[in-house]
Image 1 (tube, one colour):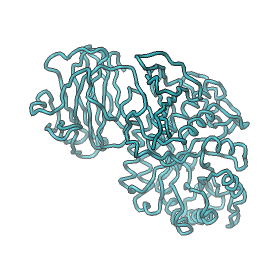
Image 2 (cartoon, one colour; image 1 turned 120 degrees about the horizontal axis):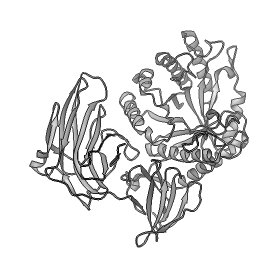
Image 3 (cartoon, helix red, strand yellow; image 1 turned 180 degrees about the horizontal axis):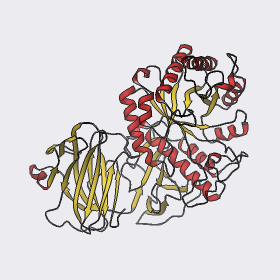
Image 4 (cartoon, one colour; image 1 turned 180 degrees about the vertical axis):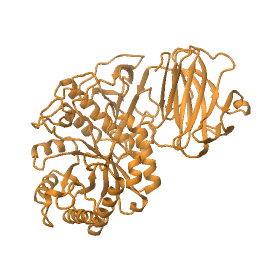
Amino acid sequence: MLPGVALIACLAHAEVPRDGYAIDTFEKAESLATWRVSGTGSLNLGNGYRGSGAVLNYRLEHGARVIVAWSPKAPTPKLQNSRISLWVRFSGDVAVTLKAEDTGGNTVLLPIQASLEHPQPGEWQYAAGRLRKRIAGLALIIQPRTEAAAVEGELYYDEVMLSKDKNVFRLGPGERTDTPAEKARDLAITGVNIHLLRDEHSLDLARDAGFEFVRMDLLWTNVERRGRFRFFAYDHLLEELEARGMGVLWILDYGHPDHGGDVPRSTEDIAAFGRFAEAVVTRYRGRNVRYEIWNEPNNPLFWASSPNPAEYASLLREALTAMRRADPSAIISSGGISILDLSYARRAVDRSLAPVLSAISVHPYTRERPEPVVPAYAALRSWAADELGANIQLWNSEWGYSSTFSAADPAQNGHSDRGRYRQANLAVREILTVWSLGFPLCVWYDLRDDGDDPANPEQNYGLLDSGGREKPALRAVRKLMTTAKTRKLIGIVPQPPSGVHAMRFDGTDDELFISWADTPERTQTLECNRKDLISATDMMGRVLETKSGPKGYLRLSMSEDAGPVYLLFKTGSRP
């Protein structure tokens, strides 16, 4: 990023700035006089975010773009750390970029895309840029997302404002969120991946941490012998889970040596997999069980040689038909698609499966931090709703972070305090991200480290080490789950500062805000009402240091590296 201009974009419900001025609110007929259109398009007045707004009718041909730009007729006021903002609404078949220039000659291009605050495509989005010098020009650039011959549509924008930008985020009781308090959301059913059929100690810790089920491979090769099925070890695991009030998500995988080896591809072998799937559903009908058909079929590690969506589609269809024959009420998901691969999903799952498929599963792994997953998630959810209908759920059936990864630890030591604390930070933020996006089901990967090598990422994804001892991530997840699940998720604060997020949870007579930063090397100041604040703790439950702020307020600092903070406020008795 060039010096002098730092831009941010979030989707939110903004207020008109009080300490600045309006560049354009489009309430007058002459409002459009300072805007110009480049490319095939026309600009008119129409419905805005509030009242009247600008409407750009565009036509994009063969990858062409349309630009609507503004430049001041006279120098704008110079506000220290000024903020340029506007509201934008557009369809999902185009990409829109905000371009801002200042009088120092600095330019930054910022894609406007879904965020945690407002992940739905096609809704009003709030875009804002931080400038150090006077603004010299502003533009919105519209381009097609695909190579379609022509794309036509409308882009709406409104309330182009310039205001002072402050690096202070104030939270307190009654803070408005993206949904009314009476429409409190249910938290996702949350599970954890396991690899051992017998590990009662770890199951106890998982239950105590708030996990409601486990995800476990139900291996075809382990249960079928000469056409007969034996489930003894899996029966034992389910009995142990049920004794703890937990359920299971069985992954029906992988190949069988008697039926094609690594992957069943022939008609006969696919039919054999269908008989296996039917036997599983028959065995566990009426129990606290869900099913996932294969694991990461788009990954060559699990679909041998080369992933083939057409091959997987045949397997999925056969398994669904057989399973519905045995149990019409079974809860069945497609195999978890790695890295939110929309291209693969389009070719592997079609609308004919909508009546028999309960969910599409995805594994939204991101290396450095969870929050950037939102645009890919929004695109996948939009496709699933359009192609399969509103009743199809989108599950996050696997996602985790290894303790070998730490941006501040080049040695990548998964046993180091630094690496394990970083894992705890990312674990809490991952679950908060999942809750913000509204996944109905999510799974952390995984419960226990798969080995002792501190440099091997695959052996360090556990919340427990290989000996079954707690890592910081388990303690952080347990605090999050047990704290949040005693309250109702009201929603996410819609207009936080750049790179900051805050979720509100209401208790009987208190309000909990969990706030975190996702931008490295930046400190954010939080201000809290001194009278109403009960406690301020970090993600591990340790009391945070606060300082005096403006009259009646306390201040504390928050950073991406330190992890989420918990602010608990008293509110009086709730009905």
